[in-house]
Image 1 (tube, helix red, strand yellow):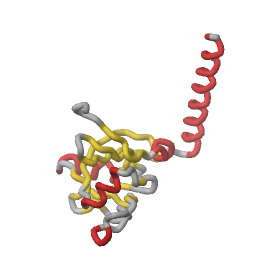
Image 2 (cartoon, rainbow, N blue to C red):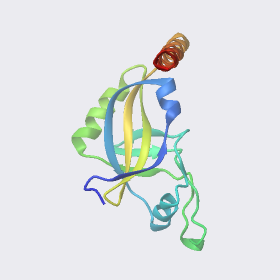
Image 3 (cartoon, rainbow, N blue to C red):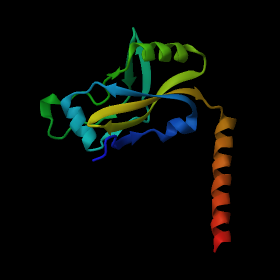
Image 4 (tube, rainbow, N blue to C red):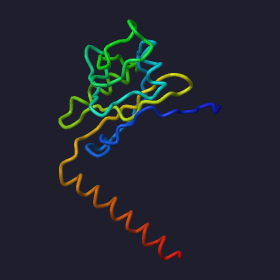
Length: 154
């Protein structure tokens, strides 16, 4: 196995559609044992999740980790608020940046890195409707150009 092997559990494609991602940070996440087992099975959703900072601590809210089938009484609430593990300086920097109008913190990916569960969070600025249309138009143009290029090679 590679030194920095990463196994993706969940990603948030909608975040890239709805926001401009300015900066990315990697954070650990505080979990119970049955939650980790459920994540190993890939049962996680971060589509509606967000990151909040309260009293110098970072938390991820709205992240859904399905209960582990064999977990019985040890299972936790699937939508509970979970603590993110970041350095104090990073938390302060993120808190100041998220106070600016139009900026928010969103989770982008959840993955295993060296056996530990990590969350990639992004400092994001909301897109307007015309920005979303522009992004879609650019993607369609690139797709069309690649299609034309493939046809010209034949």
